[in-house]
Amino acid sequence: MKPRSNRGSEAGVTLIEMLVVVTIIALFAALVVPRMMGQADKARRVSAHAQINSFMTALGAYKLDTGAYPTTEQGLQALRVKPEGVVNWAGPYLPQDIPNDPWGTPYVYKYPGDHGDEPDVISYGGDRQPGGDGNNADIVNWKND
Image (cartoon, rainbow, N blue to C red):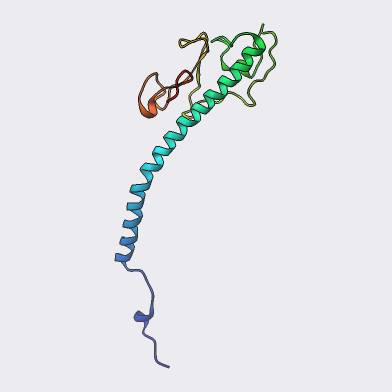
């Protein structure tokens, strides 16, 4: 048997190899993370549209039963809890409490609405203020983006 050389037989990672790996990971992150962030914003907008459509379906059922949409003062909560003085209410019209929009802000409900015979249901988007573009644009029931 030959004596073993300590340095020659040890397997290890050099500093250069570590730097190459870290650089590859950084490049991958720089390419992937911005795309993933854009998908999160798109998912919030799609979710807000879906929730508003769900409200509109429930509001339609509410109107069929009671003869009118809830007033602005009664709000979307009328879909869960019977408002005083409303006859033929057959709710709850939604299976769970009224959620906030995907940005954590309550939906705005207005009836009579400013855009036709139906109520206005609005999410103000990422900036939580009326108006805006892109992720900050309002999401409303009277038009599809």
